[in-house]
Image 1: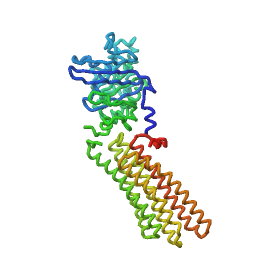
Image 2 (image 1 turned 180 degrees about the horizontal axis):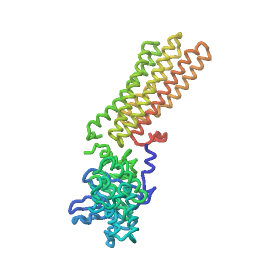
Image 3 (image 1 turned 90 degrees about the horizontal axis):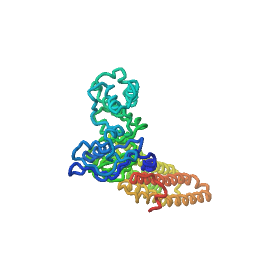
Image 4 (image 1 turned 60 degrees about the horizontal axis):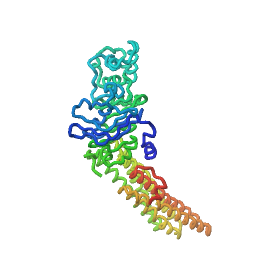
Amino acid sequence: MGALFLSARDLRLKMAPKMNVKDLNLFYGDKQALFNVSLDLPEFQTTALIGPSGCGKSSFLRCLNRMNDIVPSAQVEGQVLLDGHDIYAPSVDVVELRTHVGMVFQKPNPFPRSIYENVAYGPRIHCLFKNKTDLDKIVEKSLHRAGLWGEVKDRLHQPATRLSGGQQQRLCIARAIAVNPDVILMDEPCSALDPIATAKVEELIDELREKFTIVIVTHNLQQAARVSQQTAFFHSGYLVEAGETGALFTTPQDKRTQGYITGRYG
Amino acid sequence: MNEHIVKAYDEELKTLHALIRHMGEKTVEQIRKAIQSLIERNGKLAQEVIDHDNEINLLEIKVDELAVRILALRQPVASDLRMVVAALKISNQVERIADYAANIAKRTLLLNEMPPFPGIEGLSTLVRIPKQMIEKAISAFAASDVDLALQVWHMDREVDELYNAYLRQLFDTMITDPKNIGPCTQLLFAAKNIERIGDQSTNIAEAVYTMVTGKPFKESDTLKK
């Protein structure tokens, strides 16, 4: 058990962090949602954020690509660095930022367009292609990477909404990776999927890790254990404990983590 | 520790825990009776020990089945996972210790066919510490007590010394009179079994150590105590 996991407890030794979060505080009006959260997100690794409802894990995720900007009362203090650059610096273009830090949501949310247009949308608005052939290639590659190409290659121009839930979610992942981001944020991407579709998305997450850094919020602890290399446990707005996933699930250091993951919470 | 939100899960873990304690208690009783049968030349008691061994084998199967069921259905993590893994290991060790007790009882039946032999009392001295070790190892498991587990680990050295001393005594007896070779050979096997009870108890102590601390047992850890 121990030595194998414990020696790997400090992931930063293995992979340089792609993003660093330093002393992050988040307020919604008077209410503070996150308290002094500091966490490194190692490159080409999946970090799982776990914790009870309302613990701040989704709020934390949304700080990573400034999704909280659209909440008028939200106020962020502290630093979120992507490759050493503060994403909250005044000079940062938020739309540009989101091509580097993409997002996949809980419910599949394809646009009411064709499969092709869903994937082509990002490259189009960011002008990431030279000509039609180039765009076709980006669409094909993204669908390939999302493990969907074989299932949709003959019906690229059919409405995306005709796909099954699991296929729609993988389409949303294809859409997110079409702009070639550095980091993909996933907010409970499998909670609306059946076990087979979930397994496909989990397999996909593992493959995507070769090219992208992934952060996933999940309520399914077994899923966190299966897909992530680092796990961070949030509670009441605080980051209680973060560490190598195997270590956290076998020898958690904090009593609150122990209580939560073993089902003794409350 | 707090209880699980799912009560049935709690019940299963408690049952697993209780099964190990029960196995341990039964096994200690088997050791006591086996040695008593040997010293008192009580064939009936020896047969009882041999017959009861299967009960402990069945308990081991029960532990295995329940542990696998918990792993499959509850996906335990952290301290729960470590307890289930420890239970699997410990039940295996305890079952082996019970086999040693049955083996000793079998020696009783063989020795009873020979004339009474004086060197037999040495075994009751030899068994004293290994019997305490298994008792303490099971208590350490029951109470998740690392200090007690480490105590068990330290006791094994004394067992080895007593065992070697007893062997020398048996060899001397055999050299003095070749008529003694028959009974002494039986006692050599019994002594070896007793010494192995100490070793297996040490393994239980190590499993308890890992269960409680989450770390693999290393000899250097014992120096801290």
